[in-house]
Length: 157
Image 1 (cartoon, rainbow, N blue to C red):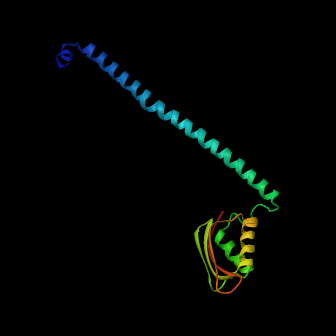
Image 2: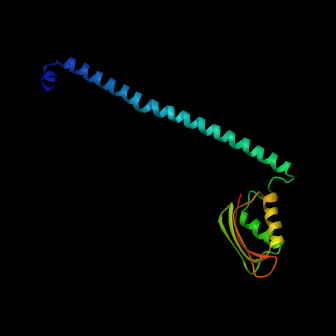
Image 3: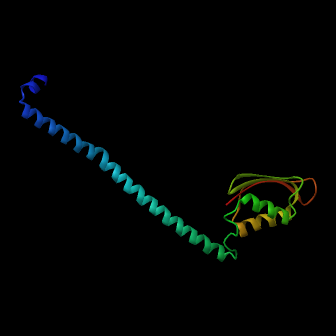
């Protein structure tokens, strides 16, 4: 190969180098740039589709809540933890034997000891209907006093 290269005239060497550069650029375009550009277009389309589905689901959520007799959650912009604390007070489930931990803005873990079952059921119903907060995990067992329970609940929206 070295002998062949040395036997070429300077003009032929320049022509071969130009050809190699053009072939290299063509291969770079075909094997790197074109697939990346295609993949980018696909990702943009997937994103647009996902945003459209999200908008449709939000519209359906509003319809479902209105059909259930509820309204759009009143405090979706606020922290779920503050809503839970206020609602626990309304149902007299706060105080001794109640601990709450905010996992993130839309997730709260509750531990209730010796609380009335009926008040707890009403609390959970209100959290679901008014604030769209669902109990994603719940462990309950009867407490010592009749009609009361010990519960560990995770609420999310």
